[in-house]
Amino acid sequence: MNVLVVGLGLIGASLAKALKKNTNHHVIGWNRTGTVTMRAIEEGVIDETGELDEIIPKADVTIINFYPKAIVPFIKEHKHLFKKNSIVTDSCGIKTKICRELEKEDFDFYFIGAHPMAGREVSGYDNSLDNLFDNASFICTPTDNIPRNKTDALVGLAQDIGFARTVVTTPEHHDEMIAFTSQIAHVLACSYVLSPLAPNHAGYSAGSYRDVSRVARINADMWTELFIDNKEPLVREIDDLVSNLMKFKYSIVNGDEQSLHDLMEKGNRIKEEIG
Image (tube, rainbow, N blue to C red; front, side, top):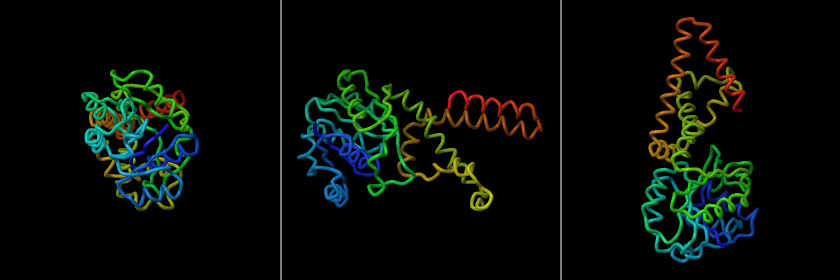
């Protein structure tokens, strides 16, 4: 099978490397910066490249790895090139805005939104890994017009790549859950290190500082788009977080030991139950 990876940054190049390592598929690659594409060829990360009008029609599966705002325009602009009945997917961290916009289109190929749940605090081709997706989840968000066998084919490809778990859900449920499991954590980490005390943490910090602040290392350009495009679920999570923080604040201000103890006991119990 011919798999085209469009965009050879951290995620795209890691997908290409995992495809080469774990499958026998023919990997075609393209990147806006030609020097990156040439490196991928020279290093054996991809088997083939070329102009988009030459390589898109060859692909049985096309994986688009762009920032959120660029995905829908790219697919619409090149819709006449995609192979009939092929699968076109993406790796973006939000799904509703993209999937519902493309669902309106009359394509002769099948767009299925996807989200490989892995990443690093660094970006770019140089930081890509052939094992980035080991033990990771692959989330697939087909809309109602997608045949089951196409979704099954994409899930099967993810399993071949090395993903440990695959999840099929709606775009809306994906975005709701990602607001909780990923986006709110980045908001919290960035808020945390905005403290005026943060620059003086050396010598006073151990694991807690490291764990809470880790994902403040953030690609601001990409995450700005992700946050805005998922604003309703994310704002709900921010409201819940602020509400819970205020409960802690009032318990501390009022010297209410029992209330403070109960909040921490409840948090500990939930963490023990859910992992």
